[in-house]
Image (cartoon, rainbow, N blue to C red):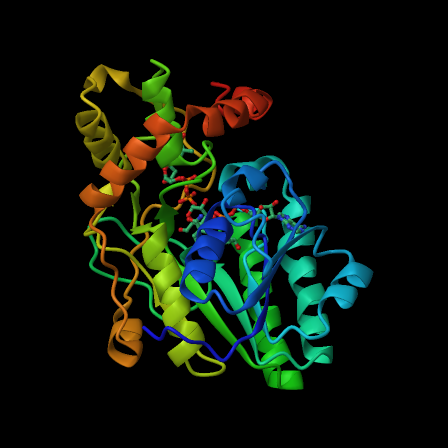
Length: 343
Ligand code: NAD
Ligand code: DAU
């Protein structure tokens, strides 16, 4: 990995969220001579507690604002040479309850950033997307997603992310905006909002509660430790080719949600009677699996952290930081009540 970078002035959108804040820590440690602006609306998922260690750095600036605010985005963009676009509504279950904001932020918000980036001739627009745009694979098949897989989004979340990917390519093809898209699998690690499976399971166990498992628990995800995602973005920013798409995945062979939950239970010394099967998610994608060999062959990237190592670190972080997640769970009670309503 390089230790210097051609980018001097970076705009990160959504940097107060889970992956964005991990990326800001990663970037400012590795490239301390760059200036980084973090534009984030601080929705329920945005949290400045994630950024305490960097908030006073002279080369870091936080701006609270919405990517839908064209005037603000146009004011911020001059002088920026790299945009790393994380800002999004990211939780599938919330997209089932309230789809509209997903379309607004994920599709229109992306277009606002693209327009301003084009006008200001940025060197690169890096769009962070998801493997969910490719739809659902069969259980027990050995099929994997790659950059040629046709789009087949099946939830309002993944449809809105697919729309954003199409818009990014459209700005590249039509107007010549230099861009790269990365579609990555399920991240986990520090600062993960406790509504997603891993942090929900870990914090529920700490609180003596059960872990809700949707449907039969056989659904499969491809799990990626968030620091490995950051190193993949780094590789792509510095060695990736313009107008390319790279898929980012982790070091997991097919492992079902139920098996993962049992692994968490084991690592935390709890008992399997803490599992509670609940009503399935609507349109629940069965299986994701990511072929990241293009990133490996072309850019020499690979994930480093095994699921067991990553989970062990993550569990210990949640055990040591209840002051971080307890208030977030408290504020999410209304959502939990509606989402986990049975019948
Ligand atoms: P997150 O929900 O933790 O954080 C999203 C951040 O975006 C929050 O800080 C929020 O305040 C901000 N935001 C939301 N709407 C905004 C708006 N209109 N204007 C400005 N800021 C806004 O999400 P995450 O898990 O960190 O995901 C980051 C990106 O990575 C998203 O684009 C997501 O689609 C993508 N992604 C996530 C995963 C994953 O496993 N978490 C996997 C693949 C791709
Ligand atoms: O694949 C990448 C995607 O991963 C990202 O694009 C999304 O932003 C991110 O939220 C994540 O989506 P998932 O829906 O896969 O993640 P989640 O943690 O919500 O769910 C993981 C799996 O666990 C999924 O099969 C649903 C299941 N699940 C989830 C919750 C919250 C449960 O069984 N019980 C639960 O309570």
